[in-house]
Length: 283
Image 1 (cartoon, rainbow, N blue to C red):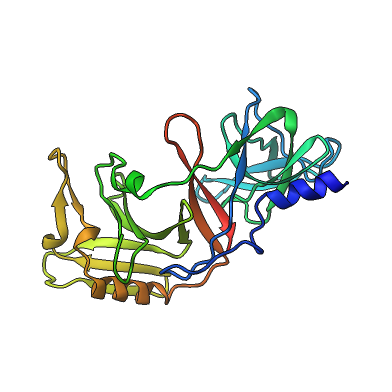
Image 2: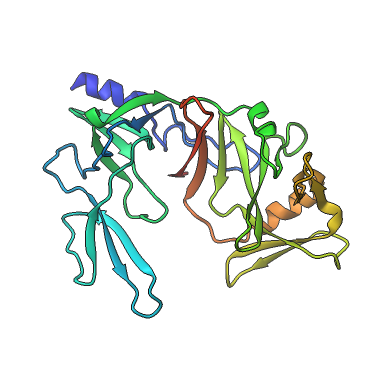
């Protein structure tokens, strides 16, 4: 019993270790270790530290109106609506989960997914996974990650520590900024921190607009805010061109979005290839 208590105190405790002394004022959960699934068939996830307890399942159904697949992730002891079929929802080989502690032959892990918000904690067999440490993301890794689109880390001044990462979806013609902070080796972002980008050559100055109906912040910007990547493969909005005044405006408008009790944490896991994984944790 004593050993179990000591071990559990070594692992991540979101509430007791949260820090908020950063430019975004977000609370940053302390993460020390993960478990990585090693079982070739994946790891079943149980509701308690007992293989006879309910396991995590996914309900699959089809929306009759538009034909889209509906899904709901829950525990197997919950009654299944007749219009759904059920499959086990295991963690796949290589998946990494924040480690919360251990109980007997099981790892206690954080299993929250954005598509399964009602599930927070689960258990997987120790035989199906190995413990791996957390490796910090450094400023140099952010500035030199070999991406075509720029990621900017403010290293000095009022917004030191602020990370602005450009993302895009060519299929939908969408582009955005994910706004976060680099704290204790993690990039941490409020789930409300995305800014949708809209190039508009008719505007001379950047404009920020909050669409209350869709809960989206949009930035309209002129061509002068674009930059061409070093290999000449495309043009991107360049967050390095944002002034402190414009950043202040952006953060002020982002503050109008609906609040959430979660942050998105981007962490580096030692897998030999510099891989990063994203976890959605309570702040």
